[in-house]
Length: 438
Ligand SMILES: NC(=O)c1ccc[n+]([C@@H]2O[C@H](COP(=O)([O-])OP(=O)(O)OC[C@H]3O[C@@H](n4cnc5c(N)ncnc54)[C@H](OP(=O)(O)O)[C@@H]3O)[C@@H](O)[C@H]2O)c1
Image 1 (tube, rainbow, N blue to C red):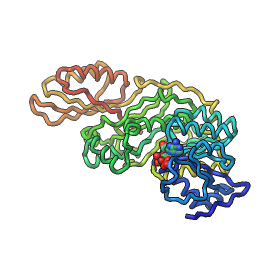
Image 2 (cartoon, rainbow, N blue to C red):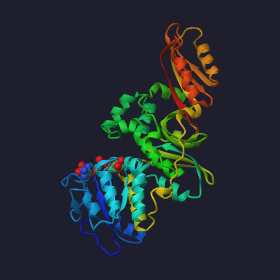
Image 3 (cartoon, helix red, strand yellow):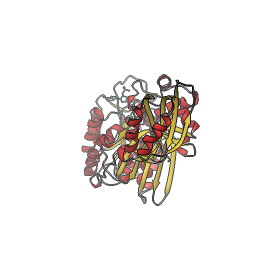
Image 4 (tube, rainbow, N blue to C red):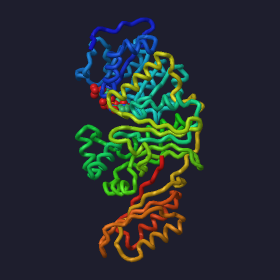
């Protein structure tokens, strides 16, 4: 690693990185190791000038002795030696928000990987960036290394979207993949994932779908040029998924994935994060482990599928550096695919209006008439059954019945399940998972 200071010319784009953890140290390494290549691609030198983190003593695997050190990250937002502040601290509020807002207000470009910040404060921050004629970019915030935001905003600029969907959380996809492969239940695999470093010590943001929801909110704002209020998203995680459901899904020719879906529907824009059964013929069903994937439907191009690493040092730093190079090459553009003040407010279609197929698992006492009672409730709600599995029949012992339905309305499905739940033969609350044909 070269320890000599980078040569600064009047053209040089000067970078300040706040946060030197997994991503920040990765960005510093690429800027150093590929300085010549990046300068060629950007048309000007890009130099790391200043950094900030909590501990100056920690070994980051990179020689930072020639770089200015600030204990307070806000110093980067005020420094004359910094043109671009790269925020890699994290968190929707607090120091990350103060840093980005101050940097933009002071006329500095900002690159961030912080989905929580952009999902919550993106519009306010984008307006400041536009007023100050600087760039705010966040490619790494959605699906890590997959260049999805660039694809939506630039590569597909001639298209209108009807759906953007995907696997947006590698931790959940890893847990579901291992549950399927090894047959273990959720809690066991989560503990293993934590031991191996694939899940945080506090995994709630990932496994409860919040991280995927932040990414979906950013994707939806870009694809549909709309303001997205986090409160309008339907969010379910994967805690309730069992190895039993995964086995039944396999028997039905499907796999269970945590999906984020933004889709135009009759009632407006559906914005939902939830586990879903996906048929094996769908490319998204074959995305395994910590990988992420996106599926888009748009009018001129048709369909597009992208798969790749959604997290990790190299993948995330790759996306951050791409944003820095864009700024150096004066390809900054706006945060969204339109100016922040031109974003519409599309109505969000409530979940009860969602139309789709369902997987239902019932645990019942095997007494005569139970199936007839369930069928009668479904018939009354105009829900038609597509398939049925019933196993382990022993008189007066619990038995599992698994049903899939044809497309129906979510409100009807929920009303039917409420009625099924109080039938005398039902032992535990009915389980349901939506079926998606992406
Ligand atoms: N990790 C990924 O794969 C990934 C993928 C996509 C997006 N992201 C996003 O990238 C961002 C950074 O993630 P990360 O995984 O790199 O986090 P991380 O490893 O926890 O690193 C955070 C860094 O921020 C520094 N920091 C924390 N509080 C600070 C403060 N008050 N002042 C100055 N520095 C402070 C820490 O300093 P010390 O090192 O001294 O403690 C550390 O270097 C987050 O927004 C995250 O959501 C991460």
